[in-house]
Image (cartoon, rainbow, N blue to C red; front, side, top):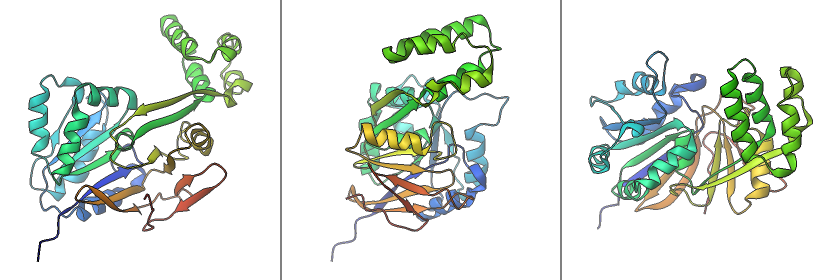
Length: 305
């Protein structure tokens, strides 16, 4: 009788920082469910590490190093020059973690260096992939996000006390990206000096731009928004706008503390379920449709097809 083929897993955390919202138990449960004894783990946060602040790497190390006797390796993509050497080092890992960061440069780096093909081969060899926030998004077919002017106005209000050079740089960049029909209104916002008047301007509720960018595509037909209902850029309003613009995909909002756990066998997706939860019982993994939504509690299966 032939032996059963080995399963491997992809996990998408809604959190950006390891142990965020006091949910380290969820992360430890995930690593236990991978079924790898003393795994070799690689971790790549996608931002510059500042030594004077607590960062994702140190948080991840404190949380996960106790579960394995092997040293967890840090990968700083923005410092990498030799891609072949990078691939060889990643190949030694049983589990690779794509940390939080900014999606656009994250994906640009992966695709421009053909690491999208490499990670697909890596996964087909039976290895495991885990994502936090932007890393979770990168595992889907596309990074999709609809931004509202509200985020722009909050950022502008925060820059009121910044240097003139910083303010001018921001105004120039935002004006170029602004839909033409709103540029005159935006120009008037830039003349305001009081934060409250800026953030309550009628422009706040208008859609600023939609982003759709190719991602790694491990999970079929699914896009996600991490930090769901816990960040100004991750509300129900954002989810509904994304569904209106990009209706061919299934859209999931995943709060901090929750994760979506995918089981594969021979590169085929066999099962998807929710693992863990946010301490706030009202914050649940939520799928949005054109006119409706559905919530999933921990342990519930998601039929992705």
